[in-house]
Image (cartoon, rainbow, N blue to C red; front, side):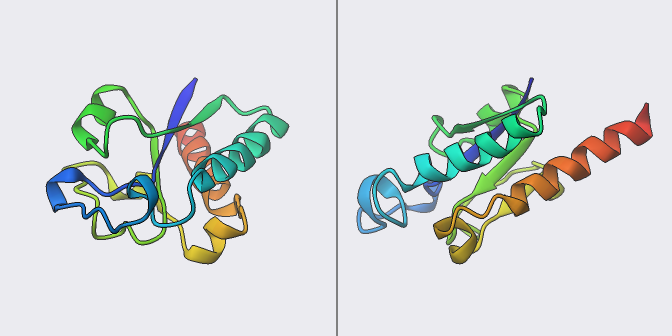
Length: 123
């Protein structure tokens, strides 16, 4: 099973401010759960071997890399607030506000398809 992690809070190393929303998120509380559920439903519908979960590391990219995370999905507004170290930027999905608020799964599904196609070429 390949892992996708949804990052909804900026890295604490980048001076996260308490005013960045409820629990560090940019939008309403529990909004990230709705987006995660929508994407996971699309993944399950296509019977893909991927699992989409919420970040539990406070945006610790090094820890996520050690866990073997294949893709990172970032909530709107985090483009410059995530310290991505040497994580391949081709494996990061940066959501727009409209994509996030409307539960648009297409950006994540497109990236999954790219990763799957790349693997097929390597086989």
